[in-house]
Image: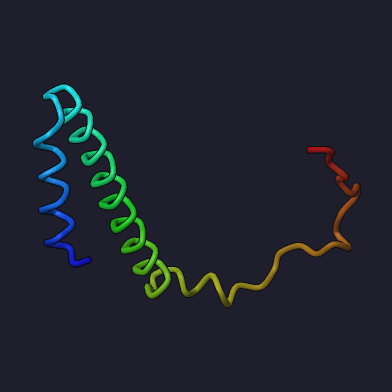
Length: 78
């Protein structure tokens, strides 16, 4: 089914609902739209962070400490 056909079918179903139910559907659609927009923004930021060279100098930084430097080993119980 095409997107346009889905839209037309949804509109037809909405026209059969009472107003308060149509408002609930609108609220749900707005929630879905907000999630979609937030996900798109997050993915865009993740892509920028992964392709940016702003913090590239950290990749070449030598480790300051090793396991041999530990005085006590932490065995945390989550």
